[in-house]
Image (cartoon, rainbow, N blue to C red; front, side, top):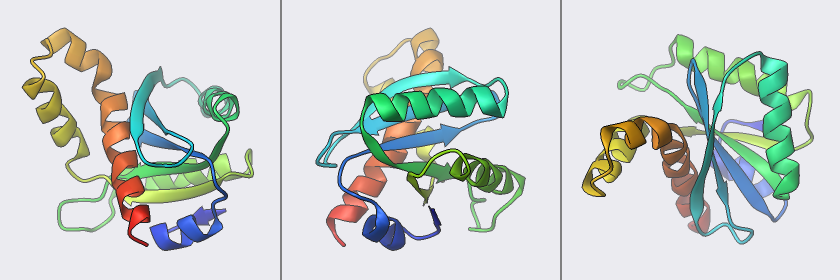
Length: 153
């Protein structure tokens, strides 16, 4: 089931790890939480192909790690409105919902890539390495935001 609020997602999602996704046009950044939902860790970046191939890989990762819920970063505009990228993310969630019983939620991802880039710069990561890991580091940033919020519910 798809939830528009973290409160609804948290109430419906059974205990277990969560998967965080940063959907881009060419890649999907993937992060995973630990089983007690305290820490998000970057996992991998998937090069997008067709929806079916991408969804199969996400479901494979989720089942291998006993994931009970998915969080998708929702790329709102800076004024809070939803543009074409939000519509694309919501469509991806609707299509994914047909393939898995996992709970699906959204998290406002404004500036997540900027924060991930800043963290990588502070860690003195090379430009090439930043390009390789930015998507799944951004996914971890998104997922950690959700975990922090859920701790205060």
